Length: 182
Image (tube, rainbow, N blue to C red; front, side):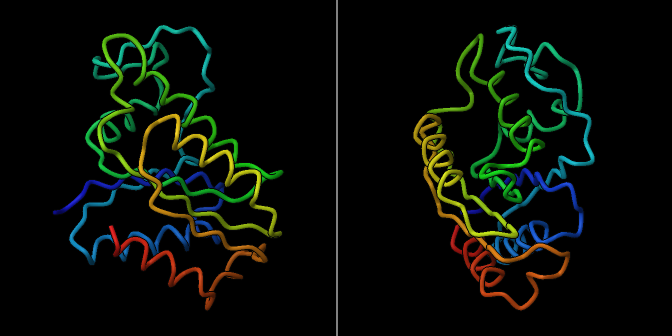
């Protein structure tokens, strides 16, 4: 059965190593008949969560703030799979991705929790200069547990700093296979 897949690409480099993982994953998913929508967060105007608890999940634009998250919310609401893609920054996800994740909280507020308990799944795609993925992988696992999303897997590629360093790496094939496996 075809799935609606949303990719939140938290890389600031549109053609960087994280984006190469995203492209490989999307090619695999589309070849399996799935619909893929990618949001390049680095090119969007998304503000940090204000912690106002003013969200209402049933509204078309559930957050009290009005910015480019309004493009993401409706697609997330109808998604089967949410892919988190990011470079590794100080043993965590990029600020672009963390901000978007924090803002998804509006879908848990108000008139019903539209983020959890719907059989949604997720995958994590990461590229990094180094190899210290343990902390962010633990955070991701906890996030999946909190959201009650099925963890489809992680593709973590270390040792890639400059644009193009990832070319020819096994992790690109792994990302494509992960996309095909959904």
